Image (cartoon, helix red, strand yellow):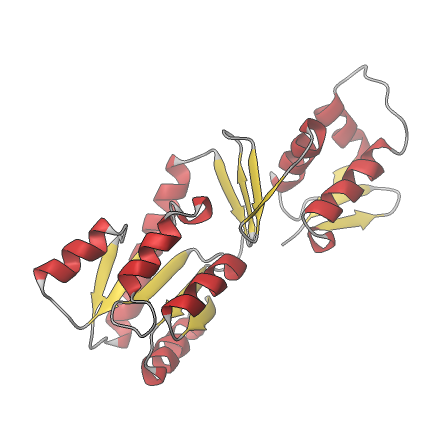
Length: 226
């Protein structure tokens, strides 16, 4: 699934530049925002594995951003840590009540910061393993328990066979599934379907989710990439 995605949110350009530089050296995919409203917009498009939020920001503070993120299903389990120079108990309590997972106190030392980020991402992996009904592929979120699919935060309606085909292809991103295997695993043995059935369902998935996710190998089959 590649390197983790991290959204950095802080209203101080120097801090954003320093933190981005250190994380990009570790080959993480980085997106930055300088205020709370921008953070909410970019979080939906970027679908980060970890969000690092400054608490004191103009327009909307980090605590309010965290509250609003937690109300969105796709961010219910995303690890969110606060960047703060404040140590008052009430600040930490309000941040945790908003759904925050941890704190990183300013001033930030690069080596310590990188170590904390790695620990937070490991925490994210543990969360993901516990919730085996949820799968995230960039902006695509699949909840198999609720039969729910979202792309860039928007809910997608999908027929049963379309959903089953999507689940098969996303079970091994990058793997080419031959047409015979797709027919067997999605439609089952002994079921007679037309030659164009798979193609029609792939076309519908491309229309609903995006053509960039589904690759065709002519005469062989299909694969999912993100």
